[in-house]
Image 1 (cartoon, rainbow, N blue to C red):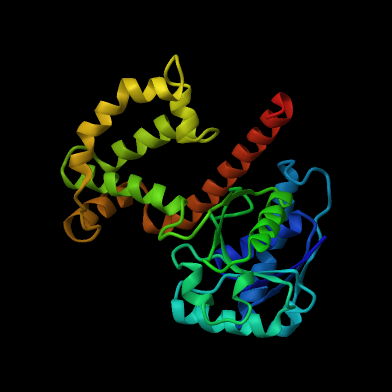
Image 2: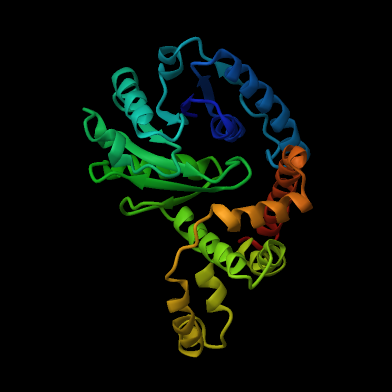
Length: 311
């Protein structure tokens, strides 16, 4: 298996460690803050037994995660480097310059950034052809999707190597043809959030009403199929039949969504008040842990369903 170097160990970096260790890759982790490395190792050692108990390791013992003594130590021999530093262009530019200087010339350099285009931090690098974004949905060891986003100069072979690596590690890569702000996931999520805020700000629905519409409605289908498959099955003649029947509904709606609601001010006061009435601030961590347990149970269910039906 490949050696993976993880640089930066916040919520995403430590979750990547679980994902790659589960896939039996040799994983070296490093952060400029030693206490963060300790926290990451503790997180990995707690998460892997939970995955095993949920039958999500396929009976295979994961490889241990190694604490690197320096950035050079973490990068030594790595064929894939996953950077997870803060969402800041200057930081990414500085870190990628170091990665390009120190990593093996054949190693792929990938960023977990959710918002910064790969061209923004790789243009000046000698090894820019091996740089791209590999953006997960947190936590990546429970949510398989990962966006593979090339810069204009990224070598197609690097993209394919990265897709192959993540697919082998039980992820579901989204291989984008080229970069765009928001990539795929945040553009889709952003469209939904924009409408959610509009509905609340304009007094049509409460935050809980909107959450019910997704949680008890659309998300039940979306947990195992996407929007195109959904509409393909929602009309007798498939996707073209659906468009012919229902496109005019969305044409009528479209002009009303061409207006942004500022997510601060009065609407945020309302959204926050309604959320805190349902979940106090001191319960956020506990609820996030509950979310991860539910994601684990869903992953277990989908795994068994795929095994049963060969999907």
